[in-house]
Length: 325
Image 1 (cartoon, rainbow, N blue to C red):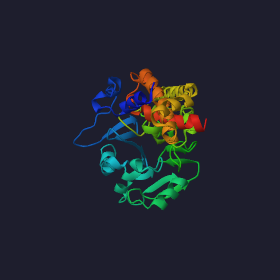
Image 2 (cartoon, one colour):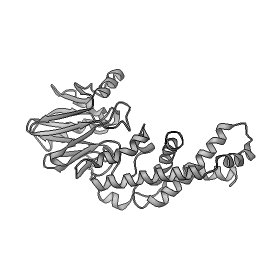
Image 3 (cartoon, rainbow, N blue to C red):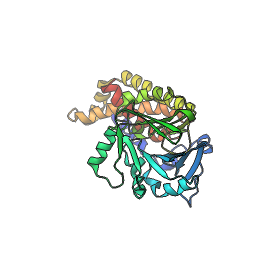
Image 4 (cartoon, rainbow, N blue to C red):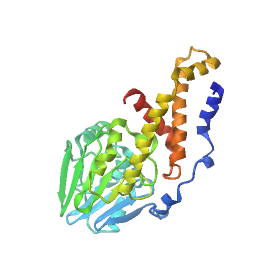
């Protein structure tokens, strides 16, 4: 393959929007319907646990005898949260838990600033980061902890643990309610879909590869991942784990079997050897392209969004395979 042919292949990533694979019907069939006039839905997933969503972001509300515990407050529908909770209970919101620091998941807390004596619980690292940021969208936590904390309120025990920092530098929470077999871990997977760009913006791929087994160690039958259109279960975690493992093995194999100097020499016939960055990029892009094509072929009929993010996933995994693994 000559250099120009390779460039033509790589530019296919910028194809027209209507050439991407449609969302799988199986994924659409399990989606929570959203009333466009309201802009959100609130769905009971356990006798006293509800998931709030606008079809893109998700949060949860736990109704207890002593008030409502809200888990995350997404910016996209933060203005609707109080109204949504009032649809299912007369209990007031008394506690807000932050899963992590990213503004898309907690930027809606600004709309809860009028709740008197609202307790906001978060990892100390998250609180320190938010104090530094001084972002008016994200209210400052009032109660912090280092690694693990059990919140007991109104007959409920909500376990908060931070076993891995795979995603957010300030820490990520696993939020579990064991008595209800409920688990919420944000930004690992979206049921029915592949992970978001760059393996859900993960900052530590080594720990991201371990996070699925950490999740599966919990006893749960309801899983909330924080994004998109449906609620998950153990099978969704297993399926995404299989996708990520296939991605890792594919990128590692393609990288090992691609002759870097041969690819660079072929490109150098067109542009010479002076631009070393360009020649190395040609090599990396070939590994990414070949890996993504394999992943697309195997997964396009199993998970939605494969061809949207496969190149991003392959690029992120290549960084790990070449420099860290």
